[in-house]
Length: 381
Image 1: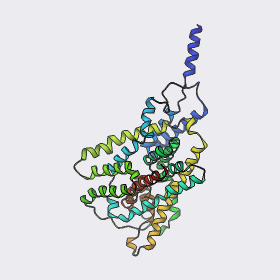
Image 2: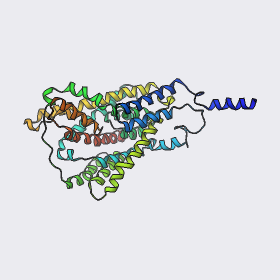
Image 3: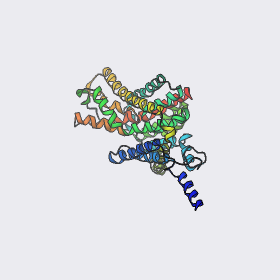
Image 4: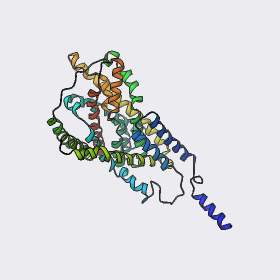
């Protein structure tokens, strides 16, 4: 009888109930909120559902030494997490993004790449803010990349510059990507007049197949020579696009933009969520990272919109002016930020169709965030 009692006591010590803390319960509650928002609001469900469930997995209280936690070497979760920690997953996601991206809007209107570049000021603005808050330069650079609204890039850079902050940075980046319509709309309305929002832009010219094939090769050579440190992301992005546009590698393109990116997105979301263990995640630094991430996102959106207004001052002829609403699409949240441009534009002018125009700076933002990551890595890594 005594042996049975001791066995029950030992069993109890191994249960989650015996090892639970309020921090674990708080993180599990946050994970449930992520899942709920993803399902009910349909805000980036492909990201928030895996991240939310990963948070629940990572915060199940456990007896130490069982070798099943994400931070315990040799565990299954730790092995899957190496794709995040070592930066393997982000380039694979960029391969899929390249295979599903149509650069026609950017090719037909090359000037729109400047809008994508202007929006990257959010990255460097947040970098300076993080420095003033006491973060080390490498940590500040990793935090700043949140302003690019690109989760894979944020994970890639933080894995190199600030691995200890990667969980908070990744969750912050993906959270703000999901909140694109909520955050950007009021900023766009605040910075533009009704007359500016009503500007109609002419339909982009038709882009030839030859131009689409040449673009990823030339685009890669130019960006890679400028920032060789961005090679893993830029190389995979443009390679994926070449697979799509070449016309002779359709099977490879379909695999990259379908099963491959789906599997990697699932793994990256689940493991990033699981990395938010309460003892690692709940800290003053995490809260500061979320605040700085929001600031960088606001700066990026505002800089994109204001830059278009500045360009319009130099343009003669009303038919060549750019609707400043597409400035928000300079962040690389494809295609959500471009959809926000379309929705806000049609609220003012029902005949206004900005989606294709907004896709220009949107895809430029994808390239821009990878270039910005390469720049930060080159002098902070």
